Length: 216
Image (cartoon, rainbow, N blue to C red; front, side):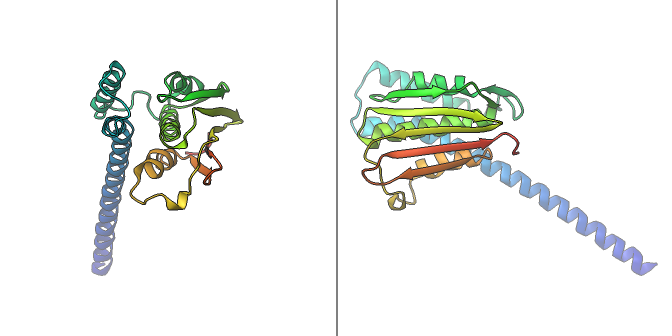
């Protein structure tokens, strides 16, 4: 009986430690996810505006003031909880349509958006990734037009962003560059989606973003 009691106590202790470790791991994972989301937001807002100013792409203008104000408002919303929640669904075509109405400076967008709904956090991630892809077109592709297409078949949602610009060698992108690695690929992966890049020097650039509705 003494041996059984000691074994039972040891088992209870081990179970408590495992439960505590799992809880700590979940908290740490949530913290890392939140930090990654905040870094993506900072990259896509304030850092983009500062880059435009630093490179002389824009001067003092009303557009710059409005952009800086929008960036500040986005940063101030960081502590707020997700207003849509993980299960609420929104019209993805309308979210992307709003993005199309405010393209990067100097870029004309041609788009086809099929009616489609998605969880709020998926729509936000998809719009953020598409927005960053379009910013890269405006900065680096040396073209004035890009195309975007949204399709949905049986819960399989696909967004394609294409330009016929300079293209680049993905293997040659510096490891420290945050935009492609986190603001696009990482952002889509964080909501259970997949981002694929097809590009080469002189061959233009194609981004394909996929999400399956029956996945977690």
